[in-house]
Amino acid sequence: MYQQIHKRESGHEDSIWSVAWARSEKDNSENIVTGGVDDLVKSWNWRDEFLDYKATLKGHQLGVVSVTINAAGTVAASSSLDSTIKLWDLDSSKQIKSIDAGPVDCWTVAFSPDGQYIGSGSHSGKINLFGIESGKLEQSLDTRGKFIMSIAYSPDGHFIACGGIDGIVCIFDLATGKLLHTLEGHAMPIRSLTFSPDSQLLTTCSDDSSIKIYDVQHANLIGTLSGHGSYVLCVDFCPDNTHFATSSSDRKIKIWDAGMRRCVHTFADHSDQVWGVAYNDGGSKLVSVSDDKSIVVLRLSDFEVLFFPCDAICIGFFVRTQKSLNVSRLYIPHYYQCSIFLLVQIY
Image (tube, rainbow, N blue to C red):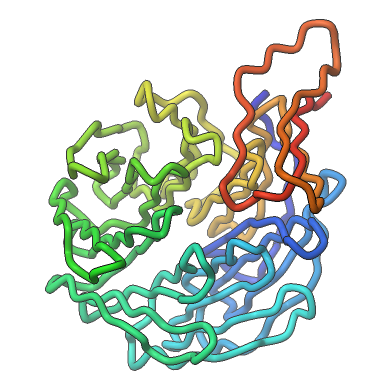
């Protein structure tokens, strides 16, 4: 069930700091984007259990801190130590737009669920929201705190959360721009945070080596998880809404059961600290990137969700591939409203 299925050595010429994975609505291709200390963004296609190099996206003058892909899987965004955010067309591999985020004022980036805005954390303690079409700053949400290292939109589009260098998490209501909750559970910088697919939970990770799970509506701490031996650098929630993955400076990747609040598997496929992890949209695979310059793809499940775009109403059904196939759930992401889903066992 849990196994490494692909490893690309020397994916970049230097450390790889960020990774994103999304399926394109245009052609159903699986796009992976990576960003590294070598100032480069690279795009890849995952097909036939192989990571196929597609293009190198040049334009940044310093290391790439963060990469993300919009919900449609067609546009990538990258942020760099050169204080710019760049938008890339993943089909043509061309730069669409370059946004000047201001001196030393650009860190983690995230697309809004509707793809209309790109959010970025800043050294001034503000979340800056830039319009995709205008390329201009449309709104700033002030935490009145310190350097924001991580941000995340809730999938339902109602909230945006950020994690600061001071260990504080802030959650804003996007409709009103008001600060809803301030969470002070961590003692050190928050490197990454993510909402669950149903937007009910917020998971955070920190240099204090812990992971915390919060109830978004009531801002209650549900649990604190430990297990990593050093800084926890990245967290990503699985589309199945029940698991999430973390990566750490201890060179490990861990898969957690959110309900049971326990680690169910640990991977040790990298030789240096692991900066980023990202699930595919079926939740059966995970990609990771590291200071060791490699890109690793891991299989997490014996079941794969297959997507067949069509013009009909979304239908979910199971295909039995052997006499005893135990299928407990068919998860249909909200952004695939016009697709047929097949859940099949992988051999």
